[in-house]
Image (cartoon, rainbow, N blue to C red):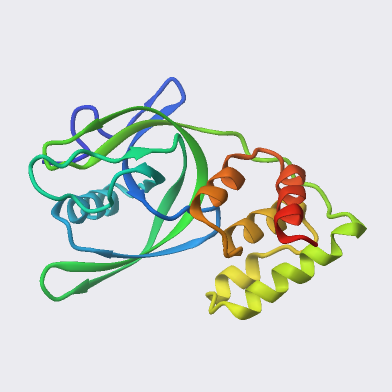
Length: 209
């Protein structure tokens, strides 16, 4: 069975059907997501995504568990805004496991969802427009320092460091949202915002700067 047959990955009226990966973490554009894959449904997902050159959707769990447990297990309830994860590296491990590195891409709104026979969640998603770009204001210097602190404190890939534009309010707001040590539900609130300025203002309030 492949996610590339019948009602699998295709565009319909601006929407796209992709596999969804419910997690207890929030993925942002440009953020890196290391995954240890061992469940058959997700091994199949990675194989099919690689074969078709597509990504999968990462969505935050609202209620339920990441791991499928028994025949009576139900798919978790999810938040309706997620991020496309693009596979950048796959390493085969013993015992039919995979080490996967993915990077966050476009943000999307989840529409209809359904469950495959192997319990893989599929969803029809609509990608939201890119957020507006704009220069940082002078009063945002403290937020830039905060971001620099988190970037230095984390062992981030050099590719992530090189892509950060410290003069762009969209870049700074998204990377701060990604790196701030806050609860996933709060990160989800930041993800769902469509204004970098509102996101920066919220981060400032939460950080008590």
